[in-house]
Amino acid sequence: MAIGVKVLKRPERSVSYVRATLKGMALTFRHMFEPKVTMQYPEEKSTGPDHGMGAWSLSDRWRGTHRMLTDEQGRSKCVACGLCPQICPANCIKLVPGEDEQGNRYPLIYEIDEFRCIFCGYCQEVCPEEAIHVGVHFENSEYTRDRFVYDLERLSSQTHPVSTLWDPSDPRGE
Amino acid sequence: MTPEVKGFLLLSIIKMLVVFTVIMIGVALLTLMERKVSAWMQNRRGPNRVGWAGLLQPAADGVKNILKEETFPAESSPVLFLLAPALSFIPALLLFAVIPFAAPLPVNFDFTLGPLGRFVSHGPMPMVVADLPIGFLFVIAISSLGVYGIALAGWSSNSKYALLGGLRACAQMISYEVAMGLSLIPVLLMSGNVSFSAIIEQQQAGLWYVLPLFLSAFIFLVSGFAETNRLPFDLPEAESELIAGYHTEYSAMKFSFFFIAEYANVVTVCAMVTTLFFGGWDIPGSWDQGGGVLQTIVTGGVFFLKVMFWIFVVMWVRWTLPRFRYDQLMALGWKVLMPIALGYIMVICTAIYLIEHVAGITSPRVEALALFGVNIVVGVLVFGLLDSGLFIKGSGRTALEPPARDRAVVAG
Image (cartoon, rainbow over all chains, first blue to last red; front, side, top):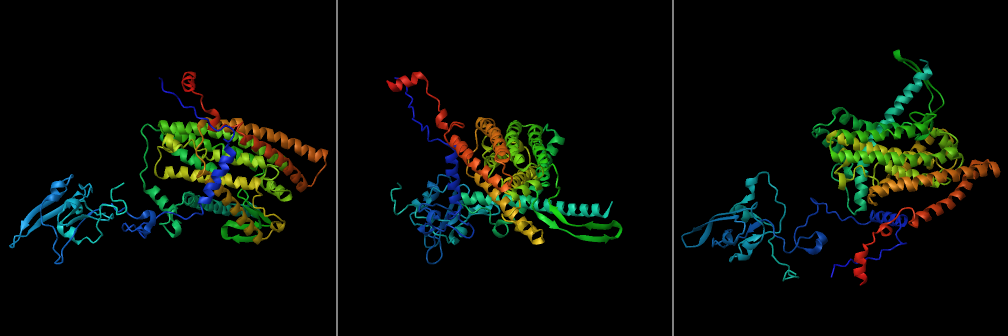
């Protein structure tokens, strides 16, 4: 059987330029007096997934630049287990493990190249110590490219909130 | 030179400078207004960073355009390429020279200025740069010059998009010039004069011509949109099809000149609509004919408000209506506006003859009112016909029937 063509019944008499034009003009005129939706960015910002910002709030799943959490003594929580460079699909984490006198492992070098990072969030998911996190953050501009390789000190000194990677109201990501 | 001629020259130079400055600043601010109006109509705020509420945005744009690199396309025709922006820009400004923008100002001075000699001026000075006795014909002649700038820009660019834009502009502007010229004939019939000052005087004595000559005003406005190449008639530019049409190859200040020309054209068309159909600087009543300084200032303000209103309407239409298809544009110009304008001339001729010679009415106000009555009938008829979709077809009426083979399948 050949493919049939569905013939649409189009309106015949109701198609009119004059009335349609006037209708459109009235619509745009009404819009002039409606509240404006533009966010005045440097003054107003989406800071995080608080839903008070309405349409401007960031998603609960927002994954921004990284942050390393620290313990009470100010040392990074990282134990240099090597899981995050292992799972990283973009190969952007450089980790050189070290060990102190008590046998505690710690990262000698921990660098994330934010340009290579694809912000998948696997490093946060895989981390057994909940040390490395992707952050709720989007203002990342720098003057040189090498400033985008975040070292351990830089990662630890970040203060922005960290991502929950999931939406509490939509846990299965539907 | 007699002292009177010197006084006249002095006043003319002052008027020229004032009008030129006001128009150039106004045009710059219109680019801002356009962006603001478009933003408001789309629930946005528009430019508000440079200066208070974005008022310095045009200056920032101007500085940017001056500092940008001037590029010349390979194999372009350099002389015409440089000449085209100026050619599209000058006619727009020239047109404003004949438009009266306020009530005559009483100027009386008599002074001697060193070696330049004695300057004398007495009596009311018409607030128009050049009060040409042929104002009307001047406008029709000069406004058709604008097409040269655009056509040359398209042709000299050596680019297919620019050429197509230029060709479209030619065809469109010439087509709509016809409807525009024809729509102005009823105005001449009513006023019996081709000078703008006389037309305004006639409107003061009778009614604003928008009432007795409603259809003319409508056709003139629509043709004006087409003449200024703005949406819904911006086929010469046609972003989605021709990149930027005739000014695709232009950069920096030369590109800016096309924009200035477009907005200057908008100002001029709006000023023409105001002058021809909305009484120019006239305020209803007889106060504005008192001939004082205050009258000049207030009527100037009223003229400004009227022009601003029409500029707003032009922007309003631009940000509401989508672009016409090319064949629809030509059909509207030749098959709708021109026949309506021609028929309207005949209706108005007959009506004026009947009113003046058969009914013997001589008062301009009564005559205008009688014509207004005629116009209500004609307007209802024309808009009813337009609305019925007999003249211009909506998409539904031209939908292609599927081939018979497929219909049989659906039926079976």
